[in-house]
Image (cartoon, rainbow, N blue to C red; front, side):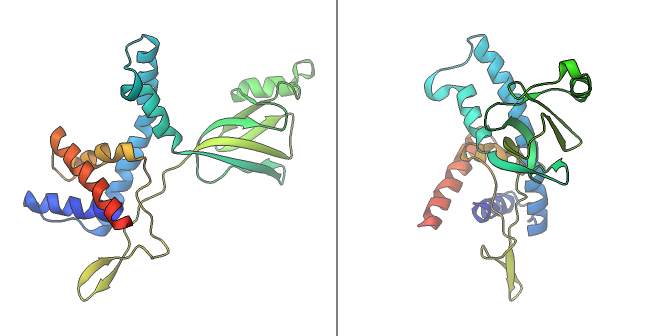
Length: 226
């Protein structure tokens, strides 16, 4: 997808007589756009949930809340974490924790103040039936302590990288490079990502143009997969 994306961007910029952007500029700008849209997904989902609660959301294929949930779940991962050196090691790609389980129970999230109070006052100590956890400064604490836990979390966006090799004086796309990374996004985000990227380039596309380019990107990717 990233090669088709880059080609389309260059085509639009050329059509608008606005020059071109380099691969490094593409990678940097695209990373910013992806992270911006990723963070906005959660606020958009919260707003759509509020609309749904007020019976203002559409149904079936136009159900915004249901569709956004699928987009967000594209970034959900499950991992088993272990106690190492007295600490529970969280995966490096953790963006937001969603849930924590042991073999019997789900852990309840509490803030640090409550966690410290409940674990220090013996008569309030959580039990294995009602365990708790707190997550601060990328450090996870649980009570009662466990050697191993299963977590579900939202992972970070993988930084995109259009990789290439120089042939003559031309940059030629190389998807086999070890540091290659395609665009890390759900297909439903293509139009929004492309629109925001072009806006960063100084091009304000109309909705019809965005839909046209998004469809073109999907078609080109399908052709290149064959």
